[in-house]
Length: 154
Length: 154
DNA sequence: GATTTCACTGGGCATTATGCATAGAGGCGG
DNA sequence: CCGCCTCTATGCATAATGCCCAGTGAAATC
Image (cartoon, rainbow over the protein chains, first blue to last red):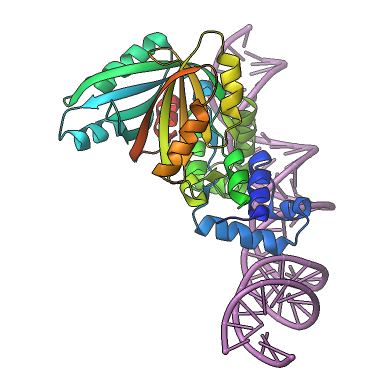
């Protein structure tokens, strides 16, 4: 899928995102056209979705993160999805196997504010039960480099 | 914390990440120096952490995502964190309140491969119990724009 | 063994963006 | 009224980009 040069390129971009194609080619020791071609390929293959700004919710005034497991009434899935998508504090939503039916990531301005967010999330026809886990620490922030390295060594 | 112009700038960058400062200033209808100053401020304040490449694990050959809730033996937290950080398929790790002690996001090459990953994750002194939820759908992929909009309207 | 295919190289060139500096206008609180 | 700050508008030297092409080497195909 991706080779070592792709892996090194992604690593480099992850470490110094504002780097340009020219500078990247210098660091990797290959021609500029090569880097450009690799980048184009990685993007058109969907390996690299984009270079969106990485925004810190805490810096926006939402320092509290929580995960909520939701149990959904049969057949209400679509409505619940629509409802959750309309709540700005819902950063992510997954439907899952297992005890709960959905798992979502929430942020809030404070622990007290989290209550308001949860009320808004679960205050909806179709959600039977919710259990929330508040995040205390984040020892491993969302990362991709180790996986890229592993993938590039095949 | 951030005003409407900041919000519009972040939205624009999220929508068209490879846009430059000059083009952004044209779209927003302000001077180039203003955009440059706003960007510098947002970055130095930590609102924008960076512009890392958004890599799709599925495109790397890891189409299966799961969340594992781990229960940890008292006093083993530090060792478990170190262990989990060494597993490339662990994309994210949080310590939480609630029933479990930790929550982690995993990826795997297949459902069968997920078993291998889970074995590697939980096959460690200090992890008492693990329960896994496999992700089926992702109706709301990790997003920040709605929150940015809300934050910029205060 | 010969040939085609493909990625990479290295170069050139016009266009465009960047970093940096400066001067002036407008709003706002002391 | 004054100082402070932000935004505007501009200029300029430097650097990067997009696009082009001819040549090279290696691997795959015939």
